[in-house]
Length: 435
Ligand SMILES: *Cc1c(COP(=O)(O)O)cnc(C)c1O
Image 1 (spheres, rainbow, N blue to C red):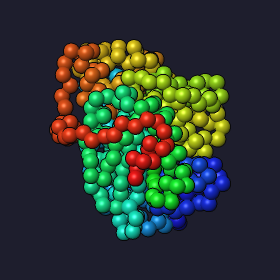
Image 2: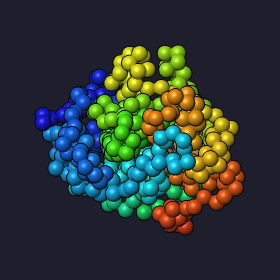
Image 3: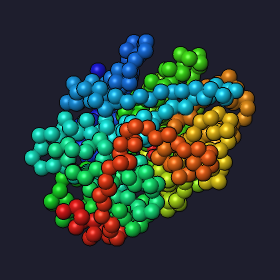
Image 4: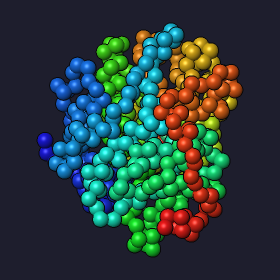
């Protein structure tokens, strides 16, 4: 297989190898890296029952073609994707309905897959560097914890987390602050948009750049998107075997990293039918698909806080792959769900199915309930369950009247002491804290 290069979505940066794209995160022209062509998969390598690392090797080897990391792909996948990602039937549903459970990792949200794969990849690229890497990560709740868990106690890296004070759940905050060692948690008196702005300003600040080697672990990094394709590959093959048909996914969406991975998996040829994005009231994408006008706006705080994104960065990748509005509309549809409806859906599905959804997954479940009955009948649908309900117990328990059971790995983190510093939303304060 011939070598694969990666180009910026904005087209004015040189193409790079996969290793370089992973190391850089953002391209120098401000664009996002995408492969110059879509590689092919090896169908023969995908028959029978496979583990997630085995699916990863068959699905991703084309993306690694010609890269020094290619020989390490097996080891990276073994170490990073040693997590269950079952597609479970929603037993009491009258139509074929499933949930792709992406919350069995150490921080109980799908971000664990990307963060762990990125950490294992960077380990091979960075472990012999003289100066440690500083990873800056702005988080609306789940990314920061997953990145901290994945990079904790690795000698070649420091992690600096910026999160908005009062805008993450108590258990999310615990996961952002329970690390210490090479992880520093900055609680910013501002919104997620402030945190993202500060991280960008720091990454571009000449004085700071002279002192630190920076990288970013936000979902602009292609090293996080690749492993996310793997669970769609495995899940779609699994459902095809069980239900005898191509399956459709409803994906809770914010920055569109998870959704883009589904789109890529389908483009590679995996048996995926429709992909529907479930947004909260941050409606930039649903409005774009309806009107054709791309109008980013400030984010609005909701119960599904990890989707509070007003300017989803991965749209740039979708538009690079499908340049016209019609093409995008063929690939994707999108809907929006408000907080009251998220609450109502959590209650309804707990009553009918006995399933507890986190607020993000509940948005997907609501979008499913809005499908016409003939769309639901006989055709398999999968709700992508992006976080464990125990992370959002303050929302769910008053609705269901029942304590959410806490997984053991999460329980361990909830007992650790917290370390954080409170900061105003200024670059000067962040710069001092990074020192
Ligand atoms: C990050 C996150 C999302 C949104 O995913 P994107 O890739 O940003 O679209 C949805 N649900 C949960 C629980 C998340 O942590």
